[in-house]
Image 1: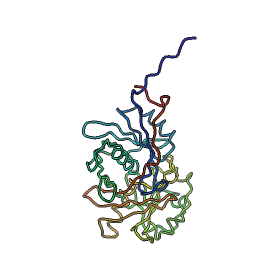
Image 2: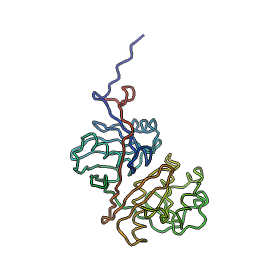
Image 3: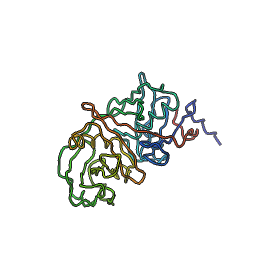
Image 4: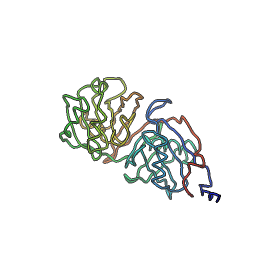
Length: 281
């Protein structure tokens, strides 16, 4: 019998981490996997790793001159912007010493250049603002969400946003994921003024079309939430609480046509991909 040819693999171990983002305690916030590459990898392989990790997002970080290439994958599709996995990636780079403490990190992404830096409140991400324009919701969306009397509805570049009157309405939603999958958007944001102390607004985010029935904490959605609440509350710094079962806090600040998102992150798992899981060299 002919022997099987040796499979070429990366020479160095490939490290992978699981990080809870937008929280200062383990087992809360939004978990993301962060895979540290030594060069860009094939998209099909990255998608398979993301499916294996089976988290809302898996981030792949590869060095390039002046910073890092950053890509994000759900278990079923690549996305163009993800806040919590970017926060997790910056956290891993700082924690491992690949990025010097206190020095900014530049990421190149499908959404253009992104930046992360440390400050006394945690890690601050510099993201593009994605405000929603007022628009009637797609047919069947409100019924699928269980919303009967929205205060305002609008469409952002990737998501649809529904504003309701109270935090209790947001907390009580039990949407039908199968019906929401019919919408030709990434996800649906539902939001209201906060009743809880320490937050200005609350939200939840549903994205079954990209394999995420409910996302625990969605940084990119806050790039749409922030402009709406800045205008309504006449302030340029606010605190959002995403009221998923895990929950998480995102501080937002206006910066021209950008949104600064701030939060904490906690590493809960670290290891290496086994040789059988590595991409070809």
